[in-house]
Length: 99
Image (cartoon, rainbow, N blue to C red; front, top):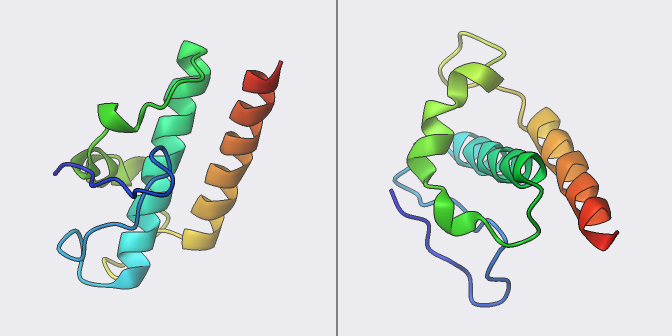
């Protein structure tokens, strides 16, 4: 599933589509997972260019086992923890790119 970009910030991961998951909680978690995947790839490849085009929502879904903290299908992860991890990685990337 392709990612539709927001006009305002072309490299910011947009809100996930409503058909990605049945609840906003899950959709927000997948958005955070995608942010993590993108930041990790940028740090690993030492690139400061936008990598959003190289990722899809399907990759966030496929990465669920790595981030899963519960067997409960309605609450498979802790969204706030995912947000914190994504924020920290994006700060790390911004610092690396500022050098």
